[in-house]
Length: 253
Image (tube, rainbow, N blue to C red):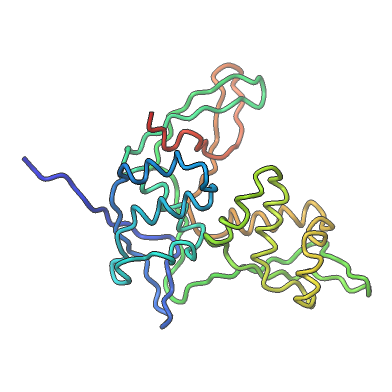
């Protein structure tokens, strides 16, 4: 009888950069245990903190990096954290996930079995890791002196950003704007003090097209798992785009 497999090696889409500038992408995972199951019953954990603790429990080590990641998990890029959650689910419970979607056309309940092994993963290329995004806004933001700011530099979101906004569950739009604001490194020639003082107002003043451009840069144009799905309704035949339903991702019932 062969021994059960205890460790699983995977490659992160982005990776962790150490103090010497080396990028570490290969990590070793273990399956979820009762310790990790208990996290889902801990009402004191926000969604962001839950992901952090789940990864800390299942991430054994970086192949050529630190043995005990500890606080590094909160500093990992969100793209890598999302990827690891998918991989932890795969090694623990398998690739197939039962999901349910509501048809946009007729409202029918659509049951779909998703295959996590078929999710596309956008990966960073070789060479220095690019962790900032440039977005040129079409309309921009006009300040009180009549200057229009259009060039936006964003860093990729991290786990500590997720933990920060996780408490804003009652206002998803505010949480989204707070995440964007934390990731802005520069916005035209705006002073940092101005951005910090009026950041949320500035973001709300942007046109919808500019806001969508920012979302696309963070969600669609950067490395990570592509959670976008196309679902077809068996009742009316309508096809619509949505994101992977993850409410039952770790259904341990």
